Length: 262
Image 1 (cartoon, rainbow, N blue to C red):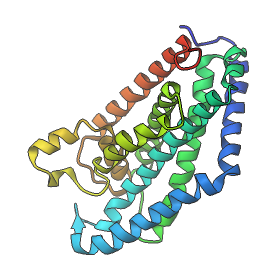
Image 2: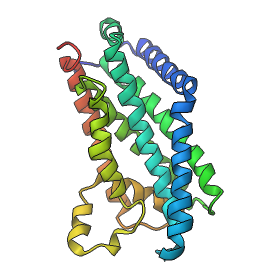
Image 3: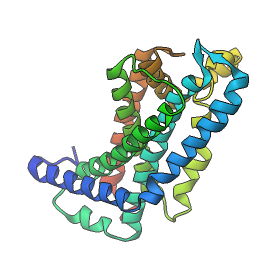
Image 4: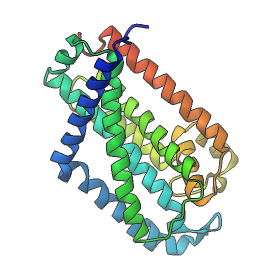
């Protein structure tokens, strides 16, 4: 298949180099990449957990603060995985150093994997930070460690790939904020972060099932609290389909040079 290369050692070095570049980039501008999500999530815990949560009471047998904590952690992972890749890859396009990667011996798959891995690392790092913040407001005990860790990893991969595709099509800096503003944010807020979909009318419950973030949030919540609105097996199926589909789409776009050679 075009885009893959049998020179595995060379591509592993390429992936490792891109990952290192991405991690150093995140750490170098930590005041932009790490601090803002930490402050934002702290405000969510204070406003939604402490103030509004007192009026809401319990949900699915859990204190409201405890119920929304997994959703807020997942939300931070999703937004940061997406944001890291879309800004980094578009920056490479804008600065024209993406051309050096394209003409190098590394495969297109290695370029994608390297950038996605960088986004995943930032997403997980911020997720850990938000988890520490959450523990300052409520008590969390992981019920299913494998489900918790695997769903975080898969979800961050999905949105890192989505950020890559957004960056491929973006022609100016304004284009990289359109999808997060008009697509990602609404899907996140309507993805069961702050409520159980069982509270919704039947029609809106069915509409919510078309939101992939719902499956990610609920599976992650199940991993921590042991409660979910949807089947965990079905959640893995949906997320797995998105991983394969988005990676295939990313590879096809890069192979054809869309948004790069135009």
